[in-house]
Length: 257
Ligand code: SIN
Ligand code: MN
Image (tube, rainbow, N blue to C red):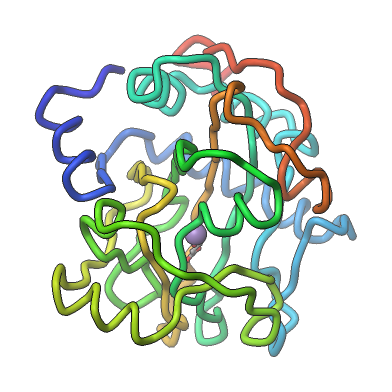
């Protein structure tokens, strides 16, 4: 699956790209069906919400489940990433972020590279975040909010927030967000289950609480060039995998096998 010239230019301009219908309902249901067991297995990479105790993020899934091991090599994720970055890529992070109905909590304003640089010593903001929506993501159930084009507006100051949620994150302050949002606005990344979303490491984003009666579950794979690998080992492997083996794509029907 190759991106068109128009899709590549849209990604360059706005910093993200939404690709509806890339995964079938059958694929998505299969992936979703693995989650209850993974969330209940007591693994330290299942990180719970501060208030409700529900799973907020469940990480390292390709090392814990054979279906997710195939998903991280899926050509509908890998081929676009390879096309954009044009060099060998390793699996930096694999997770499912959940926002349970009524209780799913915020992700603060941030860009991923601040955490990758500060925590893992990643030299350059090249990593790509590739999402697959495992449930419909709507205006109501806590979609990601992007400031389009914010990846082109220079380097923004960031600081470590360990208090707002259960997941420590390098976040961007309100004054900077106000300035960026006044310039470029805010858009939400919504779509039906099976949608793929790709975004750049320096794109500023956040997501609000899920006050709706609908769960929101999103798979996320971060691929980074081997030449741009971590230089610091401070976080657990499930937050930044150490294995630098380049990803190779499996056949297109790999989830069905
Ligand atoms: C992220 O910022 O990486 C996750 C945001 C979300 O799952 O809403
Ligand atoms: Mn993020």
